[in-house]
Length: 490
Image 1 (cartoon, rainbow, N blue to C red):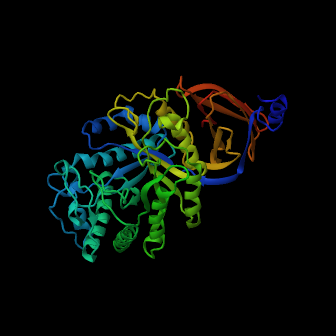
Image 2 (tube, one colour):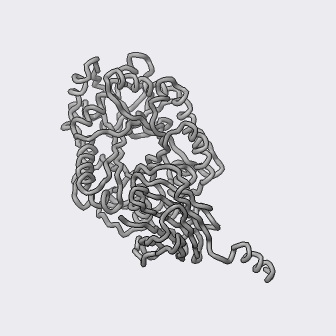
Image 3 (cartoon, rainbow, N blue to C red):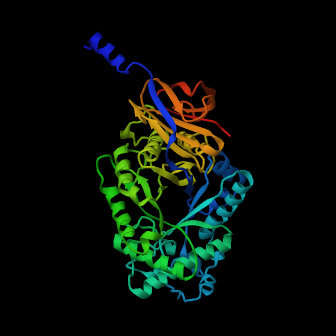
């Protein structure tokens, strides 16, 4: 039996009072670079959908995404628009190499560029933000690899290893430069950054390639050298291996770090790297939101912080798109939508992540790897949870210190866009009861009116009455198992 003395003592220590947080706008961390997604280009029905105005309005205006991750496919080199053993020889002349790429051959490859052109136009016309295209390579041309297969009638070049002899590396590097230049010229959109290999540790049944950490660094150095030789400037990111893993088990993060260390130790590859990118998956390497892992994210950041480069998360999915039956954050259910919010909070707060890409924005049906189905029905909790972060945390916003970031199941992350003096606060209540919260904001104007948006198991992204601060002091109640966003909407 709990004694009255124990209850009184707990209340004196704050257990019965509100959760108190302090936000210091002068104590800053990473700058937000944007959110985005990729898309399942292998389905022909997607082409018409993603080029429609309703889809693009959801991507840009409703979700607020400004990043598109694309696949540079070598299928445009083949007359049939397939992966094949029909080798193409790349010479010294960049223009002749670029002329080999014909996007009329492969609608599957062209869809990314067509969408990028649409999104860049829409963003420029309607927002102050600009599109960032991140190009990841799932596979180089099939003939540059050994032990690879051509499944699905050549729709994929699966697995295998890059041949590491000097001539093959030169061909590989010339292909990379020509592929970037051909893509940019065909679609009129700049590739912001290039990743030379998606998930280099895994041989898959779809387009893929295996590189050891040292091979990855060597291949990247060859590509960097060819870009410099051709007078082309580009940014590089990677290694896009799988993390963050299950809390307390660092082997997945250590695999990612083995590539990071190999690259940064290389005299050519290291200086060319511009951002570290990890794929955000839990302990099974498949589900993104089934585990809470703040210590893993903190460990990862502690190992890369000294390099002075930003940390990106460029592919995540998994986890049920529907609410857990109990409306909780329980891990045994793979978490669902609220665990996605939890992972976003941990990646931002402990991993200093500054860019986030979901695997798919849309699939034919709402599934664990997409935020929307082809019906574009936004009335689902996973879409709502993502919007709590991405709609209001805009590129250029800076994460500010929240003390403490987590108090007894209430988690708070805050971003401030200094040019507009716009404050956005995202609050998670992981408990099954109402949380009373008080927040003091220091370092900015005292009086603020913040619009309030709320998601619970019963209602998704509902606008509530605005919350006002007096002297920088906010008081709010959070429903059980909920996510709330407070933002000075511009």
